[in-house]
Length: 117
Image (cartoon, rainbow, N blue to C red):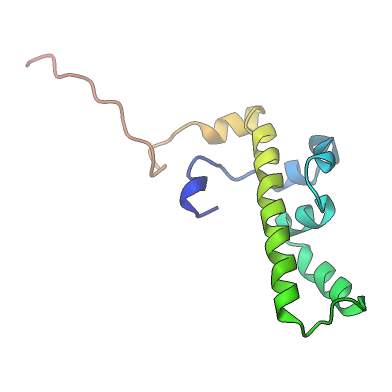
C-alpha cells in the first residue's frame, strides 16, 4: 500500500477480508480469485510452493515461470484488494478510517481568512 497510486486507500481490517459474506460475487470479477485472496492474506507462499513443486509443467527451479505466475497473481490481487476496499469504505468502520486526521500526511487543515485583514 505504500505506492503513490494508493495514497487514498486505507487499510482494510483483516476480519472484513476473511468474512466470506463481504466477498460475495468477487470470485466472478477476478481470475485466480482464491490465489489472489491468499496473496492478500499472506497465505500464498505455502500454496505456491505446493503447486509449483507438484506440477509436471512447472519445475520449481524455473524462476522465470514462477516470476511470471507471481506477477500475474500480483495484478489480480491488486484488483481484488481494490474491490474489497470499495466495499470496506462504505461500512461504518471503513468510513471512520477514511476521515482525514491530523496524523494523515495528505490532510491539509482548512485555512480561514483572518478577520483582522
